Amino acid sequence: MDHLKKAYTWDYTGRLGVIPTGGGGLKVTEFDYKKINQVVYEKNGVTIYSWPAIHCIDGAVSYRLEWNGLKFVFGGDTVPNKWYVEQTKGADLAIHESFMTPAQMMEKYKFSAQAALNVATAVHTPPAAFGKVMAAVQPRMAVAYHFFNDFDTRYAINDGIRSTYDGPLTMATDLLVWNITKDDMRLREVIVDDYSWPAPPASKAGEPDESAITPFSDYVNGGRLDVSKAFAKEIAEFKKENGLK
Image 1 (cartoon, one colour):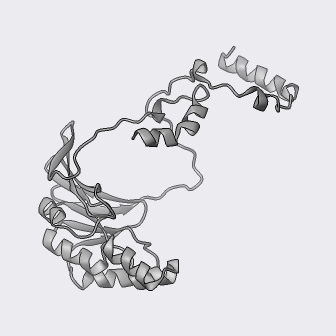
Image 2 (cartoon, rainbow, N blue to C red; image 1 turned 60 degrees about the horizontal axis):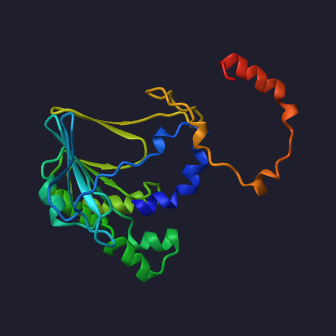
């Protein structure tokens, strides 16, 4: 995490004193990725457990969220593994990746045959393998994701899944919502305005702390072009209207 902070130092420092920066902090909870069914979060009746996933190198995990007698599972990037099946059985919503086929990887990404095979089967879950996992889990709803659900990709992936699994299935796309109770489950698609402005924040943001500003060097400041008179009137009116000095 220290290195991640360093990677974003330039960007974060440039915002200090200019805009409210309360949302720019990072809070980290460290836990052992190897532990099975480990509690990583517990608050307000919500408990989240973790266990190892298998993806590229050691360190990946999957999560199960339990609340009010309901169970939601997110596998993350992973190949099929015993822990997911053990910790997920009977889940209300079980999300697990179902990747594109090697042939699709070659067609869409122009991968070589060996590279396509490696990516689609060695570090990701092929569609038929996803089906085997869900056949063992038997969730109220299985959700396949991590593929382009498009007119020329979804059918081969669906056929692969259905070759090994015949239960409830959602082929994921963006902006899907599942309304889940103990007795019912409803799948809806969110309709959004692509050109809408952000919703108002739930709480008032803090004010910029001008003392935190990192000054420009004399060299960069020396390159400024003074055109302040062009908008001085607008700035004065804005300050007056908003009580700024």
